[in-house]
Amino acid sequence: MKQNSDRKIKRIVIKIGSNILASAEQGLNTRRLSSLSKEISEVIDAGNEVVIVSSGAVAAGLKKLNLKKIPKDIQLKQAAAAIGQSSLMWAYEQNFARFNKKVAQILLTRNDVENRLRYINAKNTIFTLMSYGVIPLINENDPVAVDEIKFGDNDMLAALTAGLVEADMLIILSDVEGLYSMDPINKGSKIIKHVDKITPDIEKMAGGKSSAVGTGGMYSKLLAAKQANDHGIPVVVMSGKKSSLLPRFIHGKEVGTYFEPKKERLSSKKGWIAYGVRTKGSIRLDEGAVKALTEMGRSLLPSGIAGVEGGFEVGDYIKCLNADGKKIAKGLTNYSSKDLKQIKGKKTSEIEKILGYKYSDEVIHRDNLVIV
Ligand code: GLU
Image (cartoon, rainbow, N blue to C red; front, side):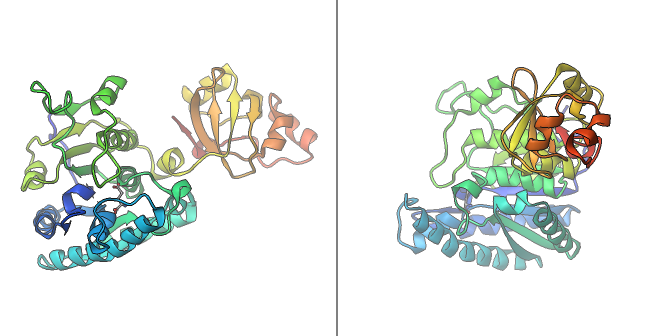
């Protein structure tokens, strides 16, 4: 399939990497930001909705703090993010105003995404902003995020955002032109235009290299692409340093690397279960239950549970493993680990007799379950 054929693009998440917008030596690259604002405005004026996930806060802050590179000291890095974020927003605001566009800032941490209520609140706010024609500008809330609650990098945040807003497309603007067949210093290296499926061979092509001021290298872009593709969202990685690539892509030209999504879309809720939330423990399923879940789309009953690992409560998210310990599903449990240890392998009709109560027949209802 050609990159841009038979797709109607409507809601687009555009991720802009740190290296495009800022450097430690120069601070914010206002020229680049200005031309990107123009190009993104053109994308919007062509009838699309755009949500921007922008990095660059830390890099922009470094210059203001007279630092030459990202400090090891986490508090100084967080201070750089705080000081740079206001410059970043100010620059976006000024630039988009030239094209009669308004912007709004949303700063997220992993906790906000993991908590269903906050996740839905963030989603509602973003949808409200879009209904007013305002461009939501998202970044990680770096000044308050500590390692355990970090997304890792903004590529991941962009993939989560694409799922959150049920985007039709994720565009990752990077300092590279796309995925290279081998390290671009090699002569024979060329851009892969189309990736049907992100296989281990494709992952090898991405190496593990990260860029100078951002956190993500090509590998992290692949992980983000894989996540968005799993949601059913196509992804394009292209250079954000060159002018007019974005409008060219929107008008149907082949640009960068296109990652083909899965045919079926994950609902926003299932996408959140798959990628937004972290699990507390796991259960091992017998062969029959694995089949019932993966092939027949059934709910999980206690009879299919062979083992329980870790401690969890009612309403926690847990992993479902097959006999080999491989994760096959993830879902919300209606029973605690303590209860499950007693009712595993038993019929639903026995639950009440064993526990003295019964919350439901299913341990995990299929609406709260996602196959991974
Ligand atoms: N949130 C960071 C920033 O705005 C960037 C993280 C990343 O490089 O992916 O500077």
